[in-house]
Amino acid sequence: MSLTKGDRQMNIEVPAVFPVSYQALEQEAKKLMSKGAYGYVRSAASNEETLRKNTTAFEKWSILPRMLRNVADIDMSVTLGEHTYPYPIFIAPVGMQKLTHEEGELATARAAKTIGVPFIQSTVSSYSIEEVKAATVDSPKWFQLYWSRNEQVSFSMVERAERAGYEAIVVTVDTIMTGWRETDIATQFSPLKEGYGKANYESDPAFMHALGEKTDHESMIQSVLDNIHYPEMNWSHIAALAKRTSLPIYIKGILHPEDVQCAIEAGASGLIVSNHGGRQLDGTVAALDALPAVVKAANQKVPVVFDSGIRRGTDIVKALALGAAAVCIGRPFVYGLGIDGQVGVEKVLENLIEETRITMSLAGIARVKDLNQLKLIRE
Ligand SMILES: Cc1cc2nc3c(=O)[nH]c(=O)nc-3n(C[C@H](O)[C@H](O)[C@H](O)COP(=O)(O)O)c2cc1C
Ligand SMILES: O=C(O)C(=O)c1ccccc1
Image (tube, rainbow, N blue to C red; front, side):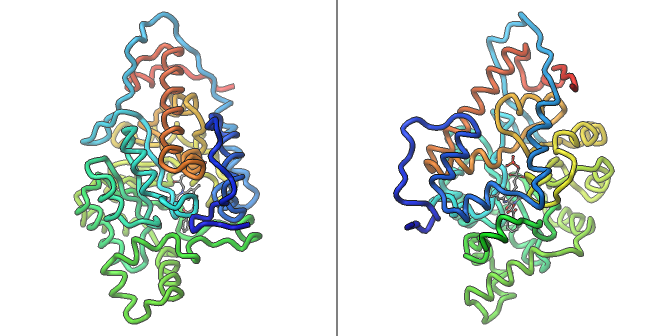
């Protein structure tokens, strides 16, 4: 089997009819990607219980729609902090997108710009902050930080995101070490080791300074891994970052309502309820089932964004009805990227937006801002 640099199988063509359902997207992406790369995206930690629960959780909540409420003008816009966005949808931070397609984050960020969806760039992206910014001037972008054990590297990356005009920093707190991922162990797949996620490190002056003379591939990757692996991390690191940046900080990976207060006290401006798509700690509560208590604890002091398990427009509406301010799309866009690059991501986003529009209309709620009035029944 011959593979391109993007770990794509070359003999397979873009399907004539673009897949619509999540299952079809996954199936098509499976044909296009190498076994290791596909396994890395699809799989999750340990027994994959959390991965499964994340999606079945949506079926336990049923919409109680209202009729005849004039839904001719659907307004999907949302305001988070000082920014208003046209849809309640973000591109989730997903690292190493060259794995999926040679144009990686450049293709995804361009698609996000075309559709009008903010792009959250991962620390371990295949293209640097500066490259993504150059490819998509004037579109809303956020930067996701994997805290570096060497805090000068963390601060330096945040400063670069500030200079590039990124609108917020997302600090992921559920990945102080990588989860137990049996598929990747079995396929011996380690995308970081292959060098797919080093662009932001290579172009970081603080990281390169700390690296000194040892700039060979092995040393560089080992240093990236050593920086991300940081079991000592605690809330004081968030407080230190909050003192250094004027950008809003969103804490990604919150499930327990008591962590809401920790995050706010440390200086967070927002939260992302997420279990990392089941890729970190397995056996957790489904992200959707954690959402209501976190929303309650946040008490409208900070916006609560949601991810983990969003597969279609009805999922988006349910998450918003349970109090999420917006949602992040993860695996669905990754498969779109694998299937047809920028165009594939655009199609996935268009379908999600269209299904959300129809769901809101048929449920009788015209504005995303009013979705908290939509009644859901727990079955
Ligand atoms: C291939 C892959 C790579 C990811 N890389 C990152 C990352 O670099 N940083 C991060 O905060 N989350 C990362 N995530 C987690 C996503 O941001 C998001 O939480 C998750 O995909 C949501 O689950 P879902 O895709 O099942 O909806 C990654 C997810 C996938 C599938
Ligand atoms: O794969 C992931 O989910 C992820 O976020 C990640 C990326 C690089 C290193 C460790 C975890």
